[in-house]
Image (cartoon, rainbow, N blue to C red):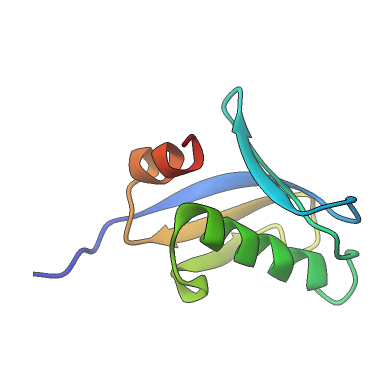
Length: 90
């Protein structure tokens, strides 16, 4: 039997930061990336950072909305929202 669970996570991205990291504080997921918001580089960096922080492959984290906005929504394949947030809160 395969795991078909998934969830949507809303993320606030801060491009051009001094360092990259992912934080879950006060109910908000914040992703800081070094990359500038040019040609989707900051969005891709945020996707990769989120995948790494949750412990998933990059392909399991898919942007669903907010390609050019600071607030983005990612579909997380293989985890429920509670599981994903628990991994971020470690």
